[in-house]
Length: 118
Image (cartoon, rainbow, N blue to C red; front, side, top):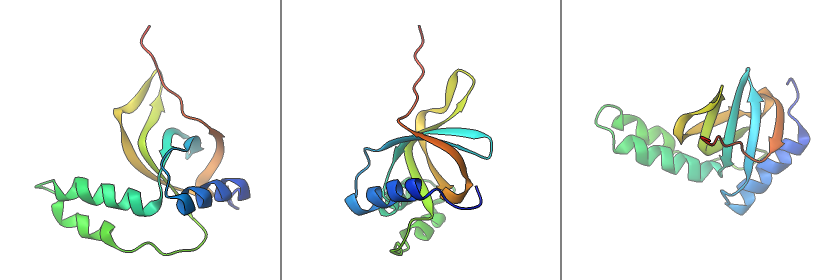
């Protein structure tokens, strides 16, 4: 999408202003379907930093995510507890942390998708 969807930008701005992580969203970007909950960027960065800090191999990268967030119009969606949908499974099963440029979202819907083993 060459111009970001204004409605999606408004959703992202509301998540940022409310510091809430309860908004579920599913997006299509670059042919991938990502589903999960949105988090404010500062919360997302903190969680990624914590995960990296606990890693022996990539702990040194945690400082990159400690940088303060600049205010202004959101340019990215920050997913946590998110999955990339592939066939009948979500990858990873437990959910991951994804950052998606709003301008790269080609379609979206409110809510997340879950798979159940019947």
